[in-house]
Length: 182
Image 1 (cartoon, rainbow, N blue to C red):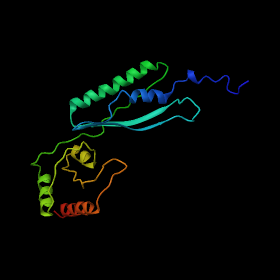
Image 2 (cartoon, one colour; image 1 turned 45 degrees about the vertical axis):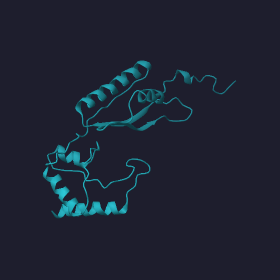
Image 3 (cartoon, helix red, strand yellow; image 1 turned 90 degrees about the vertical axis):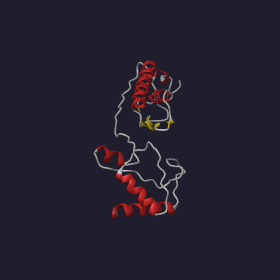
Image 4 (cartoon, helix red, strand yellow; image 1 turned 135 degrees about the vertical axis):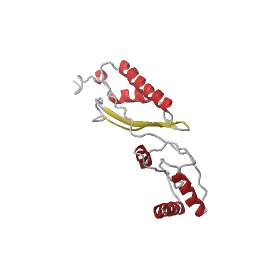
């Protein structure tokens, strides 16, 4: 008699399988100029020969467009419903939270005007770009504190090949020094 003759893994509900079905219904990466959507972590299972009972996914979407935020929220909720219908014996808990607001900068903001002056005085040409990133600047602006992100031209940002040239880093430090002395 086989040692595992009574095992019935086919009757288990794989939380990892449910998670992959959920993820496959969602967009990933850069969706447009101001929107990104990523599932960044997945944790689950307790052994290589067991049907995984639980899995936790963490991800986020970022956008500067409120209609896009509503549409993506609806898409996540619909994907949860669809996966729940595929696995009626399983359960899904969804925690959607808005953590920070995006912001747009006008060319007339006093802090931006001052940063441009500093960069020009250093012989650097400012390049204004929309990033969709989340920084301490978002949080400060939500509390009425004027803040801007001055990037240092990092190469291959958010990849395993991310890099920065030392001279860029030194220029960033010099900009900070001049802002502080202002």
